Image (cartoon, rainbow, N blue to C red; front, top):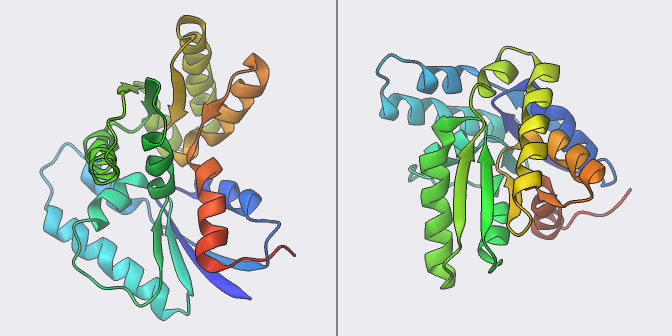
Length: 222
């Protein structure tokens, strides 16, 4: 049985990965480190080199503990680690890579929702890099759900889901044509619940991730 080490910026992401991969013969080992995100999101000046060193050491430790592959579920970690020149001995999969690929494959206009404003710039750069390599020109508008990220980081999950869900419902009412995507894993529960209630598909990172992981790791169902 293969072992997948998962790096999260918040413990709330653990359940999403557990549920999404429950049907596969796979050992999941979770590492949660919110410190780096708090450091990078603080009002005080921070050293990007120091943050990258911390993230790199974290992945090295996870791999040394016997991981066959690593999944990074935080988009801010993904953006930071993209700057690393480190060559990893096992596959390192960023949560947003299959998601960005899915975004690039759509021709119609899209809205990409964030709760963490700190991930927007880096994620959009990654999106446009993906698009350029694929010869695509995605039509994407970014919207940030203000005041929501602090709730989830403070452990106020219900308040977070309520704010995110309310925003999505209001957006659905005004946007009949454009596809809506939730950019961050923490938004998955709200996206799926609102999608069922409003009979409207809302994209999220898990929908693209599972097929990517099964193909990359050759996973078999239990």
